Length: 348
Image (tube, rainbow, N blue to C red; front, side):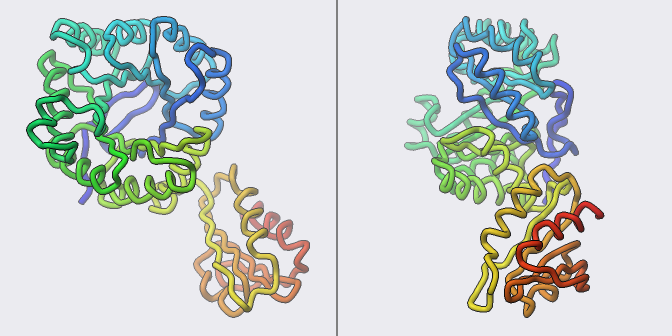
């Protein structure tokens, strides 16, 4: 089932409704390092990141907003905890979205102040609930951070904003437990029409973080749930962007780029296919053509198994075949395979 969420304006783009799924990442440079933060934001935009978030831990960190806004054109999100004045300051300086939990910023007059300025400036608010941030009463009621507990918390925070006629809300309900995260988002999808920001929090280092994120984010997207995604990795945030794109590619949700298929190799393989496949992947990183490229180990399966590929190579003994839609074009020596394949890709 395809979930239809509310469409929300986010800076120069849209989130939710029938908009494409936006990829997010977060700066991991100390907030006081403005120059380093700007540099990393530029790197993220170059990598294709659609939305960039950064922490505003104190008033001084508000000085990040304007220089980053000048340097990149993608929407910016201020990540704020507890101090509502930081949300007001970020809004004044032109931030595009605020991540805050209305229940954590004090009495209703403070929630109203944030809702009012965000309404006036068309700034959406993301309510970010995770298993470590649940209210004492909700925890006592459920005994632990269950999916139901997290969704109840998110709906409570949303109701605080709705009280002041604010409904440009995005919800995230993250857990480091993949099963809990999936159930929580499924539940949230039934209970509200707000766009959902998907992520497995504290997912881990690159390898395990990508695996957990692929299962959690991927299974929800496969069922039509989710409007924007962030892959959390204890690593360079640029890797988060590439991983997010790979999840979207694998599900056929991102098609403005090549899709690489390659075989796992076996005893028939006579060329260095592992290195070749890696080189092809690297060369295609910035390619924007919606093509399927196959790198196959032998002639037995190559052109046949990968006949739906737009272009491909199949290894032989020190050589390989270049084929197009299953039809063999020519035989090429192993050392020229990569160059010849790239020439054919340029023609497409």
